[in-house]
Amino acid sequence: MADTQLDVKSSAPVVVSHVDEAEVPSAAWGWSGESLKTFRIAGWFFTAFLLLMIIGNHSGKVEDLWLIGTAALMAIVLIRDVIVRRHPR
Image 1 (tube, rainbow, N blue to C red):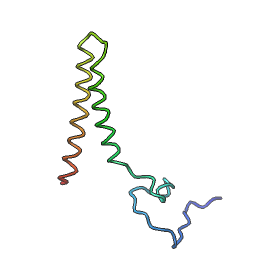
Image 2: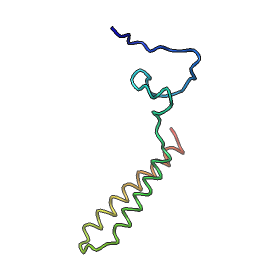
Image 3: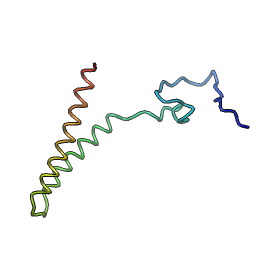
């Protein structure tokens, strides 16, 4: 029967992670972190993309309201993230 313990070598580099390496083996290589800068850039890109979608061939204003509302909600979340990260409790 296979052993449930991981074989720990003393020569392996120590990687600090908030993930248990027994559950996520790739955490030992540092692949379990989040790329917060990439997520923020993507968030602002899609916020601008939603606002650019207002320019189009649709005739109703309901679509415009949904696009503006969704973009505003995304912008609020992104701004809140910046504020919370600058002023941790």
